[in-house]
Length: 275
Image 1 (cartoon, rainbow, N blue to C red):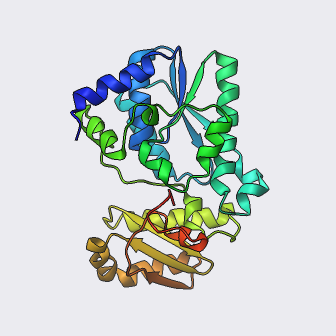
Image 2: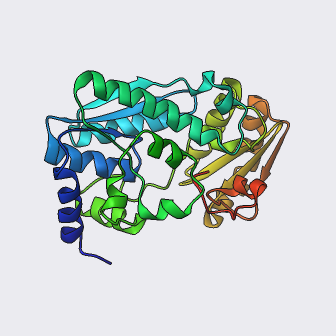
């Protein structure tokens, strides 16, 4: 493990050569680290931008705002329109490409209008081996990935974020709500609201990580194995509430939470990808 002081110097060096930058800021640990260091070395020509759409939960938006305020980032909210694109709503395995293409298109316009030279994202080296169609959109829009350029793994990101006192240093990955819908099932606002309400309810029970996988009228709950007992204890309450949202059946996936579990549809191992 590399010392955080070394990591900090490397990332500062990577960013200090930029004249100005807009960071695509989700509030997760990766983009937070990029935004915080960009703000440190480029201020006042550093801007953090969070994209809001039905695929972002209100909980995640509130947490992103709070994280930005902790470091007094110049933070802005933009509304993206991926839900207006058939390529996104038809929910093919390329869905994330259309989302990121919409985001980076908007950020490029913003940067051009306001004199920012670069668009930055929070991709790290570990992401390069995952199934991430959004990286193709980043390449097409000349978006820079300073964590990749600095050679940061996810472990490096968390190490430096912890050293800097970033509160989300150990925050689990939280992909967008559309990632709960199996490929081929169309994504719409009604479905995303069902998923958001289901996950909010489950998180309020004390679960640290949870996915409410949407299989039409079935909600398949994924949690880490050590928290399955919480589901069992509250199973009647959970079933009643999720049925009130419109589900007919509620199940617990005994394999536990796997980031990317829906990628099994396309022959990729669970745990690979941002789903």
